[in-house]
Length: 300
Image 1 (cartoon, rainbow, N blue to C red):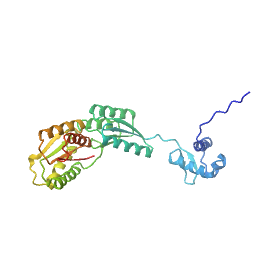
Image 2 (image 1 turned 30 degrees about the vertical axis):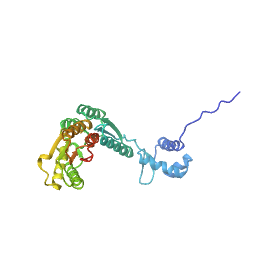
Image 3 (image 1 turned 180 degrees about the horizontal axis):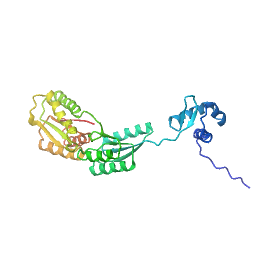
């Protein structure tokens, strides 16, 4: 009669040893030192020491002042909610990746919901964060008009709020000095005009995003001021605001339409409020083969 082969066990030896240590302290229910645990487990002292330190670091054990180890109540893992601007926008994707990496490194559960660049979606996601009782909400949405509503929902639930890029009431603001970065962008545009076109500028276009409010729009006013600071002879009539809404397709259409209307014009500077708008403008410039006549600068 053939013997049945024993079933293969898919075990992780070091994890099994860690559980032996944890179960020993749970069953004895009293603080113990390294020597005592080592003698009872038959695990190498070095391994026992590293297991103990790891369990202390992760919050399963505590070490007393006299060096003994004891079981502690396992704390609930902290959960953060992140409302991302849009999974289709490069900068938003980068922010999400960065937050996920930081959360994983810190041992924090991160719940990511996509605001889809849409006010209704952002409001629904805020409701979901409140429903799940997260410990912190990080909000990245672009519409200043719904910012108070989102903030009121989160604040009313007693949850701290961090607002990315767009200020929200009751929130800690995380963003740049929009006017200053716009100003520096304008200086770069002016410098390019000097070096490539002898300072001859026909148009300075701001691809803004009005729904984001005056703070984000100050990127464009800052860029215009930066150009004026380096090219003081440029007339006021050459500065033009277009509302690209922070969208690639809208910015592409606006830029293409403008370039078609001004086919013979050279020396066109474009300051875009977002990288998505800049990519739309770039597509139009390349499509109409105007690369030598246009310079684009962008934040994000």
